[in-house]
Length: 535
Image 1 (cartoon, helix red, strand yellow):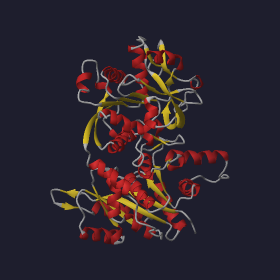
Image 2 (cartoon, helix red, strand yellow):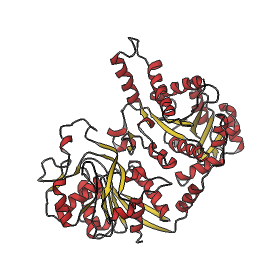
Image 3 (cartoon, rainbow, N blue to C red):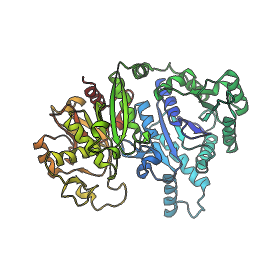
Image 4 (cartoon, rainbow, N blue to C red):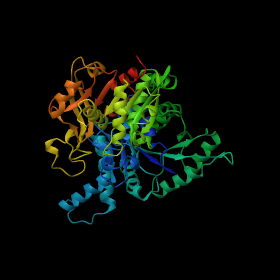
């Protein structure tokens, strides 16, 4: 079967969290730098339709694409590495697969046949993978299979990969298998047996991996590579070492040194085209690893025990720090710890504060106390989504004197709903039904701080929220000194508030962190760090 698109499947064995997403993104970055058009897809084996209703403690951050899809956080890595947008098609869950098959069965699409995992579920998986390849005519589609080989829920995906390799034929697809080679300190040895067992499970499911990427904390000897190649039936140059590194942005360069991209292109029968163009990437990495200054920033949130809950914000600060040749020391502070008596102590050494997004009332009072502290002490402040809403509530309470001001999310019967649902949302009860998701336009007020930060009047940013600033209170807020400087031109909803008299005080209803990449650090984060270091 002839095909113009080549397919790379990335699987993982031995343990979760080995970094399939980073390896996938690094390989894609290398192929892209050689002149190929590449995209990456994540297949998640859980039964949720999307991660939108998952607790961040369960699955980390929910990443939102331009077209409004709530997706796995790995799609954030894909965008940050490739500097290209992903979409709904780039993240597929078992929930979505099964939902689609059941809906077809209910409509009679299968003409009375018994609906089974094979062929119906596997056919739907293959359709989703191929759809991405034909949608925009990518040269290479990299598909990351979530979970670990051997998991029961991953079996339909592994079977779909086996079928696709057979159907595509020849050099049109390959499997990259990521495993662990642990170091046993007591024995003073690296052990390859877990990798051998992992490959054995793949073989039992009908798949021979073409490339092995071995995560390790100690460098692999030639003998170990030969042993793995022999026992796992792969070529020696297809055994790739992935050493632990200080930053994920180093991985593409390590994979280039290991010739992962060259091996993949050779096996896919694609020309090398040109040497990878990684000059900007290398310069960025040099700034990350060799900063000229440091700054302490505090992130106030309620999921701070799991940094992955704020993955895009954390990475945005890496990008913004490099742009300012500055190391951002990010302190994660749980808002439930903050009260009036300890706020000054907890925030004593910080030069800037971010109040993070989130849902629900837990930890809100701590966020409000933190906002009050930075507003009164002229410390640079960035409020994102709920963080912006907290800024409005705090201002209404302490400056406007509306002591009962609140969001109807926290207090449905508040006397002053400065944050509220829009009228059209109030009858919707289904989770996600009231959400504003994806990219929306925003017009900035000329001569405002954000206008100078962006350097233009019209912007587009991604959203993930239900509640809005209540326009009934807008004039009151503005008269007291909190200006609405970003407005949605279609709905007239307030997207940005700022306090011009403050050193740097900006609240945004959208999520700027979703659009920050290595090659394009987000201007809000860059300017915020610039203010924090006093420039």
